[in-house]
Length: 168
Length: 168
DNA sequence: TCCAAACCCTTGGATGTCCTAGTATATTGC
DNA sequence: GCAATATACTAGGACATCCAAGGGTTTGGA
Image (cartoon, rainbow over all chains, first blue to last red; front, side, top):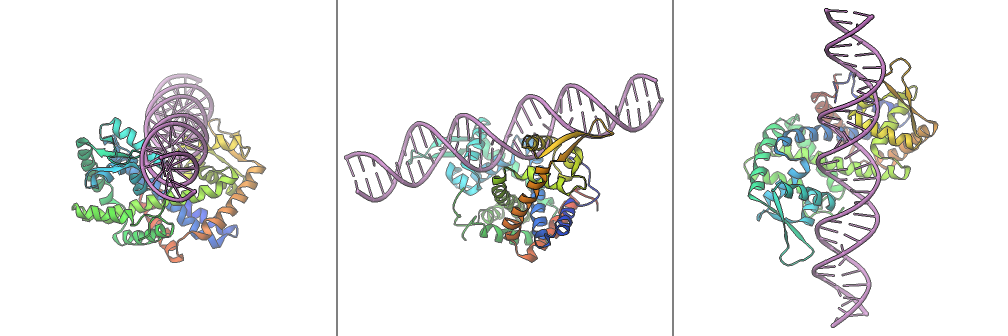
């Protein structure tokens, strides 16, 4: 997208907020904006690593989730809840994964409303390969110092709990 | 989208990573996944506040950026660089803001390639109103403790600099 | 028993993001 | 001065996300 800017645009925004008399919320504004931008950077890296496998992050997440399920299968509503995305997003991802032969839909044995997503052998293999790639090319070189990783997990975990993500 | 889960799905993922022998990257994986999820939560809150104004976050960001420009106008490529999004995303946002009468496109006085985006009076007013709403309904109740805000700004600022966002 | 309410998934529509390619204008180098 | 290169914006396409609405299945209370 571009070359480095001469100055941090988020720090500039924070100064603008202060200059306009919103100093009391300038710091949270900057923190939140930084989270948005960081997510964008990380997502781009992840998608770059997954692209050669024909995967996107959304599809990878579903594949990985299934690979950790004991039976290699999950109801769609369960996947939606665990991935914390809208059910239609799961429908979309499953459509594409199914077209790629990585998962199949099968009816739930006892509940006619429910559809199970099942990993195929190829799907399981690709999940393994893609995870290895992400581990070595993204997570192992995250760009966060070890103690910062701990801070992030602590701070964001607290935030997510307060936001109602989980009871725990 | 749903009720709280009984347990933190990201903590579960971290345990899964460790169980599979990827303990060395389990923590960064969890931190990165937490950032993705936090962004999703924050974006939903922000969009909820902006919706009554007929704005999305992308459009708001552009409007706010223009409102801080001395002249209330910026070249599109400048906006793209400062917002750190693809030029086509700016084109898209400007199209919609222009349809809403909040900005107008005008030719650059000396460079025929360049288009200036200019805030209208309505656009300037709406930027003010929307910012006030975000300040009071999102940033003032961010859900982050004050010292955590500082940590986030520090950690994510370092990350963004290393990622090449800015030189500074 | 039976019908209304709850639940599950999908379709269709709106937005946003990026990429690739194409058109127009500037700048550079010979 | 002119051709080659670089820059700016836009059009079209692929994906993802959400919301609203619709059709099928289950559940639960009268």
